[in-house]
Image (cartoon, rainbow, N blue to C red; front, side):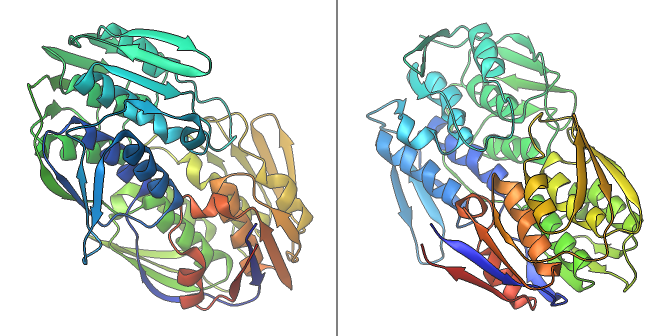
Length: 419
């Protein structure tokens, strides 16, 4: 199993470009199932989750071609299988995103109950209940979701809880439903807006994405198009924190700062100087210890749960005590035990992390437990004294494109050790 060896102490400085967003790309890849024609996707990040989604479509009979410009052409107009097998689904919860498109386009789907990061309960019942309201018949059998429908029918659907993938799944399914579908209590994440724009380019009729209510007027078919994946706001936020914890300077190009307002506000609160343009963010961290910041995670536009672990490292180095409240997932403090092995002083009380700043962190052998936890351990290693070895880095490869290459370009000293 590969590991990352990090020699801490370098101050990160430089300029990098943001990769395409995994959380925007995955639903778009799933949405290609709806099209009768070829889809060309540009700026796809090179990540394990993207590879897994392509393997999933390929196992169904999709044709996927990569050209010299690193653009992917995806043809799904003649799928032979409508099943997502467990061996693929178990590594990535986003596999559930093929459920809605398969039922809408082909009238059937068999999807293994998903796996992925063990960061808490992310129930698929929101997806299933909404799909039933569109007229699908759902059964759970031998660890699989089996769904069928002769024709989905538009409906008024209110989600019992806010769900990003649930919103995406039903939004896709409703594109080919008969009549109008209204979704309320929906997720408002930028990736929802991105998916709606992509589907509308394919011929869908979606309005209201990013608001409390999304309306989808069903159409007979969807067409081919070309689309570029937008930048990854969580990747950008992670590299901003990397510069902050190493008292560095960074400029990230290709990112819309409006998608990171709450993160930028908290970085400024720590003492960082942040400047933005239409498509870039710059950060300079002063040489003083950061100020502690209290954080409560919540669905967009509030502070993202995917940045909580990274801010644990800033607060661990801060001059004072801070609190982080995790309200999205109930099991997302698994990085804390590993950070404490590096000298952090973090106590957990239910959904609250109480962090008392320390003078220094120290290198240690640590183990990643999920995607964003992996990022926090790397950030801690960058500012720790000595060497840090991060194990189980397959988690980080699911969501960060060439992370050690980008950090080394900024001045870090990271080596990928073979298994």
